[in-house]
Image (cartoon, rainbow, N blue to C red; front, top):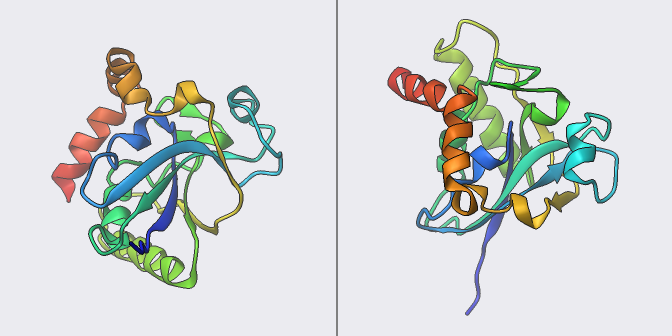
Length: 177
């Protein structure tokens, strides 16, 4: 059987909170937490969080575009983040928590830029959209204890997502859509 899976990579602040929204949807094959966009090979969580590697915390999503289109991934991405915050997401501050869409081909770049323009033109936010659109680079999977964190540590994950302000923001963000 021939599969034509594709990969999407998004940085949306804490990667723990970026897995669950995409995971287990029809056409999503896997979601991996990791690091990308920086200059250090094989970084660790502590190195990335020190904001010295240039890496973003990110998720890499393997998906079947015949079942779940890239445009739908973009729509889902935008409602998980505050695209106006250039210095992190919610309680998480620093370069490793910035937002970005990492494109893997020209078509992804075109769709990402178009989706960003649509969001800007919607006037949904009172501040400029600062989420970057960048060419994908090497993606390093995070340590195993960070994979599928929302399942492995569901109680802590729920407390973190609520306590960070992300959950409330998402609820309000969905109302504005």
